[in-house]
Image 1 (cartoon, helix red, strand yellow):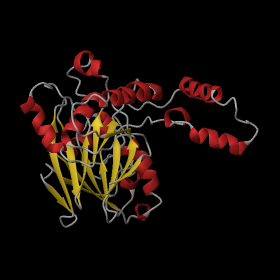
Image 2 (spheres, one colour; image 1 turned 90 degrees about the vertical axis):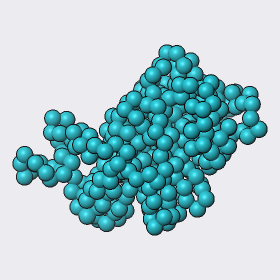
Image 3 (cartoon, helix red, strand yellow; image 1 turned 60 degrees about the horizontal axis):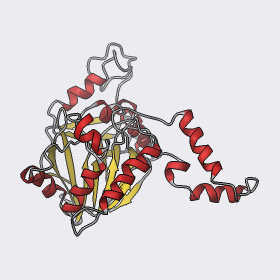
Image 4 (spheres, rainbow, N blue to C red; image 1 turned 135 degrees about the vertical axis):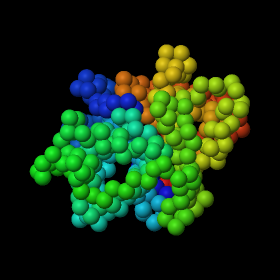
Length: 331
């Protein structure tokens, strides 16, 4: 199983500002006193030695994750603005010729998880086939509403077109709702189970199992009763033994418990505790707060998680990494 991240932000797209880019340049130059800036090779080596948050960015697109099976079948989790970049890459493959097939799973339909769907070019190519799954039984209606001509110039399909010239999605769209649980794909080689999460409108965690490997996507979740063992047990059972757990780490612990209580999101430190107790191998911090720049994600969200990890009272210590656009994991 291979996983690639195309969108890692929560709530709304948040591209780097000019001021943030200037700050990155200033910091890089301040650390380059001993670098010969007239030597391109030396400069390139120096830049590549910088940590990601200084030389680049974690990314500003909203939620979209690509999953490839051992036989390269394509599963797409959510359709935030990161989906557009994935679509551009797929247009270099059989999807450009109308020969592509993919399985799309929607955890829920808040804007940051569907706003890239109308910009996914392969959906407009006749012959491509997309199987769309969701636990919400009115998934098709929700996506169709987003492409009402009052909000977007291209429609979901050819039904009720106002004129023959109105653009619409010409791929084959098959909606399977509510999504079976468990969902068996590819002759049973991939099994996907779900868990309902505490999030406004209800979101669902996804547990992918293939060849003994486990990948869990559990974004958009709040954990409100951290002191009640029975409440936490369903999460620990679902996350148990995962090779990779993608976890909602949008807020600081202070924000999660007090300032943003009931907003439906969690913190890295809660993720560290749950992942360690559940025996997760790698915890991926995800769904970054749009108001946080790369430095805050690195120094506060990630930094606090590492400091807390040293004090977690469990024998197992998970690896913690930060999701960024382009991150690829082989499980």
